[in-house]
Amino acid sequence: MFSNAKLMAALAEIPGLQEMLSDPFKMYIQGAQDLERAEKSGDEKALARLDFGVAAQCLRCSKHCEKALVCSGCKAVVYCSKKCHGEDWKAGPMPRAPAHKELCALNKEYMKRIPYFQAELKHFPWSRLETDGTCPHDLLKARFKVLGSGPKFGYWSVPGGRRPHDDSPTMIKVRKEGLPSNSTVGYVHGEVLLGSEWPLDVDAWKFKDTDLVPRLFFDEDYHPPTKPSPGQVKDWKSWYEWRGLDLASPAALLMDFPLSVYYLITSVLDLVDPSSSATDRQELTIHYLGAQVELNFLPLFSELALLLPNTDLTIIFFGKPVYALVNRARKEASAPLATQDTVWEYKAPKVSGGGSLKIRLHSESESWNRTTIITRSGPVKFPDALVGLNAGILTYPEWGDPVVMSAIFDIPFAITEYAEQSIDQLAKALPGMRLAASHEWRSAFEPGSEGMTSLLKERRHPVTVNPFHRPGQRALPVVRSPNLYNGFALAVTMGAEA
Ligand SMILES: [Zn+2]
Ligand SMILES: [Zn+2]
Image (cartoon, rainbow, N blue to C red; front, side, top):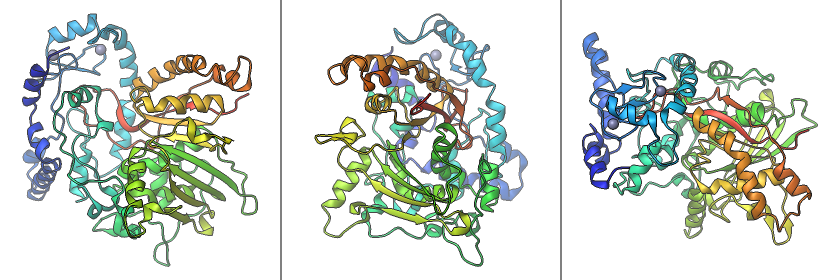
């Protein structure tokens, strides 16, 4: 470990960091302008010089690397020097962290997925792949003029700055050392819900060219997608095709959220009954845990109604920002959207299969916990599934109850994570988490009782690549192995299994 002063000195070296700390978007907006200028001039050399990769940082000492060295074995992690690589090879950076020699072979396996992820990214004419393998999402948004904070950025509104949820372990360490956050002052997740109505989807997407919008409302000029056959929409390409949307649309940079839910409840948890019909509809209630920026674009989850014929879906959103938003809204004199029982409702056209969606916000607690499904008067009706995107289960203690309760009551629960390594570690850690909980819950569930048996049951945790990951490697300074928003999926609890 290193001292605070040493760390601050290391940070001062990182190019662009100080600038980012004062205005989180400026650097990317400038970059987008530079790019546009170079493209217009047709100056190939100037274009080639523009690189929006990340300032590399040493995995071992966190120092900014003038020339990034990668481990020659796996090529997955960055070091500043042979010395740091050597030290890390022999012993982990912290007492219980594994040495790199124990991780190198596995990293090499993870790296084999790079060609797949890059090929997926290259489908899109707007994509960029920098020399360090990263994709500058913020720069891409700046090019479409949708990078910023607040309702004037519609569905795209983001807090700016380093988002704790997005940070690499290194950056989380930095944050704890007390660096100022440069989130946009006054930003609120879901600020639009403090108003009285959602803007029209075509407006909320904020594209100058409305052909880029995957619309939710249809007319003679813009036809609804036809009812999808099971398995028809299986990746980005097939989704764009089914939607009649040109790959020139950057919609995938936001639609990874709703489509990842689609992937979790269909492929991972297998909850959707393909035999449902107009007269025999399927009802599904999903608890969506850990919502943040999602609050800015709840209507986009309507995609699930288009994708799931004859299904009536209710999604209840949970999370600290949800709780804060609703409680703030309740104090307002007007009746903002956030205080309504259902904050968004959508019905897909008949030709698309007539699915429906209702969205509600959970405001009784800051996070999903045991009291969500067990009240003084006994258990309430369980949801059909829990989902969490980019969850960080091993990082945030709030996930303890969902992990344990879903096992006790066999509630299907699936999540996505950024990296295969973290999802593999999670799959390995889950049995231990349940075993530890069995001691805590001993007084409530006797040995041999249904709940305890269910908690201690051996469970499968299949790990898969999520085909609806956000295209492009995240801009991380210390790793080169695949690390993507909604990159990988895992079933925490498969539900009642044979
Ligand atoms: Zn180093
Ligand atoms: Zn290695």
